[in-house]
Length: 216
Image 1 (cartoon, helix red, strand yellow):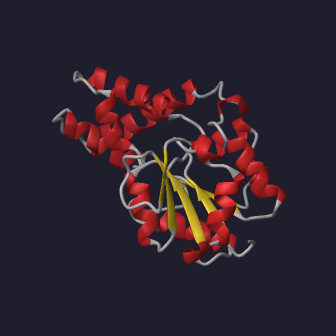
Image 2 (cartoon, rainbow, N blue to C red):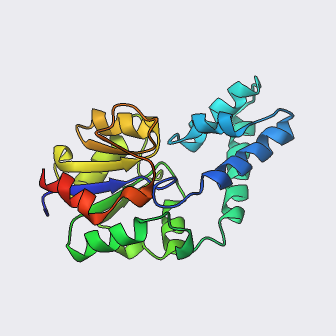
């Protein structure tokens, strides 16, 4: 099984920080004078911070200078970081701790493949950084999902061929990136399209389920 690798997205797969992202973006929208709903926030899943701001501004029909946009990106990140300071191991999503420890015990390579530039900070707070074979985040890539760059770098760092990698994602952009990279995709969310497997939640990510996929 060591010639197979698992790649985890972060937000919505390992930990639910989506609500903190939403509140940070909503504050930006409120300050700019328009409403930003949780439904709107779905458009930002799996998308880089820069692209997320462009989507947000498009929703508000607002045009800003590059300098102003840069300031807002910093402000959003500061708001977000302040809100996640209390994250700890108890915030791991159901089943994740068990699956990470199982993979680590049986020396099955696994990596993080996330658009978040705060990924390492979050993993540190959750106490799971040392378990990962490789970590690839927003600081390591130049192209956002659905481009497969983040997953291809993760596969390379694990020394695993892309076609032998299994991606676990909760966004359509992430599923599309995985399939473009010729990887198997496990979707957390029944509504996502083109995944090889669709699970209702991370609680269904049992060692038995992963082992069956790896062996097949």
